[in-house]
Length: 116
Image (cartoon, rainbow, N blue to C red; front, side):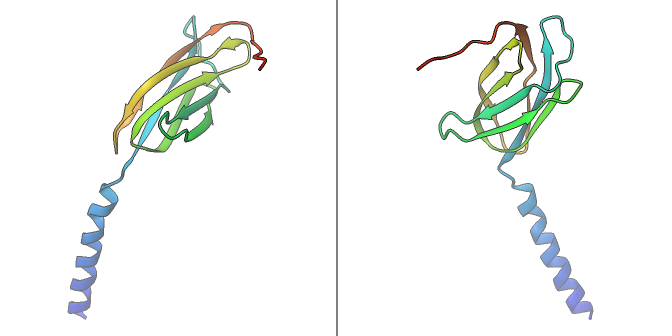
């Protein structure tokens, strides 16, 4: 029984470094308007320019958002809300197991229509 407990302990200890070797990071931040007031329910989209992969979340009532479990690499973040012009931050270098902070301010503006 002692031998089994020792083997089980070794197996569990050997798995710990695997969990620590994550290749994912996180982008989080606050969405504000030009006066500094929180902007809730804004659409926050993170896009990897080299692959086109994207993830969307909605900011909470205090303007906060979290894009978790993003693959390490370069990301662009765009924030949109009706009645505001979109705000963009490009070239965010996200490293594994790190949190990148991206706070953006939205400016009042008219919604534009693009015709192709």
